[in-house]
Length: 334
Image (spheres, rainbow, N blue to C red):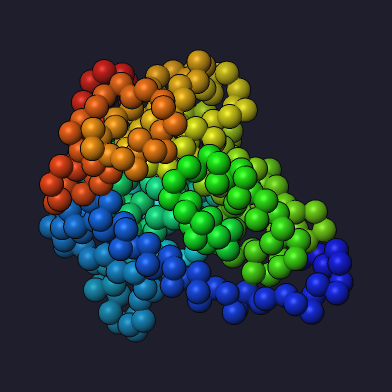
């Protein structure tokens, strides 16, 4: 990392080691929201039927317990603020693969080359919520789905503290974007938290003089998704829930016409503007989903369902992603 542009600021720098535990704790707190808004229980139960257990920490047992370790799926990114790409395959083992590097995901044999579908859950979601949403999608489509787990850093904390659950567009560009630029200048060590996945994306942007990765499209997830779509020619389906839909809307900006034409976009709990060059849209909004309507900005949905913002099938009046995605696949080729 480069030197401070204003050397005297180095005396006031908050170190990464001082801030990261707080960020991790807030990320874990968001898991409570994941359990409410995503089909976490059904996801864990489906894996249990296949003899698998979801764990959220790296294995600590000796190598002699390898056989038992192989029966566990590590979602250690649960509290990790750096972000990840998780491939979820409801049909084939191993059901879960995690990537912490965008280039590795793009280049490895078992990475992007076998993926046609990408999903994005709400901003701030942990690996658990992202994987549960992708599991629903994979179940519906009968193919593996790659989920982008959002990074979570200081700029996101400021946004959330100021009410950033609402008005994603306004907060991203008028609050979070300036905040991340200032933090990258005056607190580069702490500002780099939550940018791990973004730092590995092709053509990523960095702050002048400090070299801290910064996002260009409102969030790191949008930049990562944009990079993946720019580097591949076979991904055709995007699915987003809540602010994940808005992440998709920002990510496709600036893509070439031939890329847009091949894309079909399905959203749940938030409607986005339908770009003229995109191959097709299917958007679902709940009739009792006040949060989704607030974030939709008046955009029209193709389908209204009697549901609130949650996709947790164990709760009443929720949006059942698997069945809705299956029905939309009958309308347009996902």
